[in-house]
Length: 226
Picture 1 (cartoon, rainbow, N blue to C red):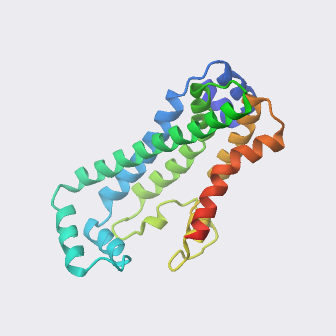
Picture 2: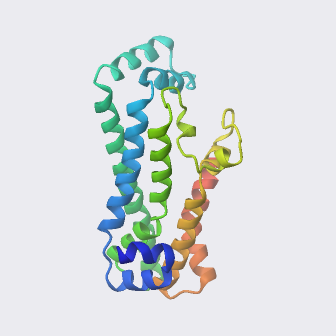
């Protein structure tokens, strides 16, 4: 609990402690649980048939017959079961992203010879992402207090930039969708990642920011190219 509070309120102290004792399970479980619960509440409340009809209609390669067959298949199990599957997928996806990101930092560590261990870097990634729990909580509150039966997936997060700015995501390009689906907690997490990596590696803030932001820049680049 002290680490959770310090990451949000006193990150320098928190990351110094995390580097010395790289425990990560609390942060990882909080983030996985938050993302999983948000997905569960959404898919347990949304009209499943309507949701997948909307998704498949956006794919020009899917015929009406294929779409109808898929919708029949996906609506056959009880809806809570379908929601639980999507919740599990979301939670696992969080862990996989963190594992890959920590691997990226480990490769950088091998190149720069700063002798940081994979466990340390995985803890860095998990704890710097902690503000995402606040985003998940905001989503959960909205989902349990709002009729979500016909709510598009783009409207789940009340903190998303296009929600805050009152923009319509329909017809937006991939790059715009990626950028505007972010929320202030994503920016907060990036700042924590830069600060934490600076403390872990001993690099100056400019170098730490350059290295820490490369994965985000790559994602934006791919979205722009797409």
